[in-house]
Image 1: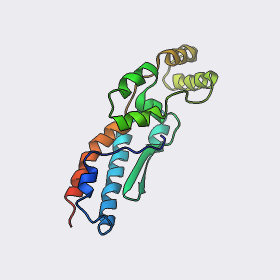
Image 2: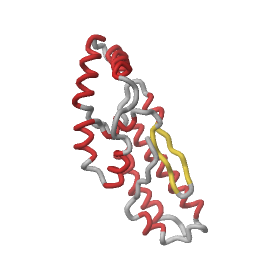
Image 3: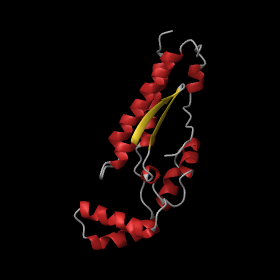
Image 4: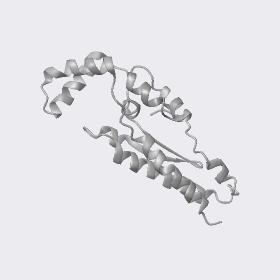
Length: 171
């Protein structure tokens, strides 16, 4: 999933309590823990077929930050859905998440034939006739795919703990 900044309401106010330079290692540890919580939570929530998406979820510490994402090209389609389903779901998200989701609007790359071939593999794994791959792909292309959020719920669950950890930090 691409680069975007997601703000945590109340974080700046909480950080204003500290001499950030003096307490940088402790603050960074809180961010690292937050990132790990989001990563683990997302891995628990992500839908699994072959496990590529789950295996691509990562956490990377930054300077007083933590980046969490998924590196497979279809992660955003799973997270936000596609077509009418994406529009309905994304409209319920906070503005910064809406901006994040808009980065992925449009085609996922590849051809329809590539899509049908990937659906053939999916059909095989699920015991469905390969003949169903084309109509399934066509239906998804026309109607879209429902969102199966994993990153946003994991982020929401972990953000309050980040604020709490920072507030309870020993000065």
